[in-house]
Length: 143
Image (cartoon, rainbow, N blue to C red; front, side):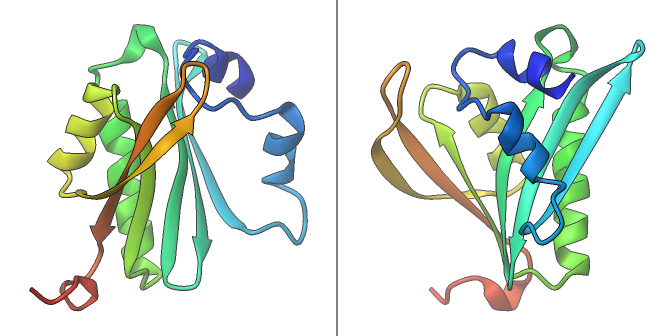
């Protein structure tokens, strides 16, 4: 069900079935996988990896038919709350430069653009924009 949902979005970096199974393997990195089900099927999911004082948003997918219904923001707000509870200093993510909707969502939640990775994505080739959310005031860089 996760694979089918992910495959709906051709521009995503697609994980193999084995990669998704690894999320649950004993000894795997500390990750969360949250699902939103609606109409008897998974309509959105989020995967994030925790490492020390950092969290990386690895994947966030909302079905095309269920976009603009608040699923993405609900998952992100839950991630931010979980990160703060774990005393994570920052949440990191990459997004395709052309993904205007995702970029707007991240910026709405105070993620800040911090860099670019040239030709990071393939199929089609495209730059990745790197965003960060500082989870505590003390973790933000001094200006």
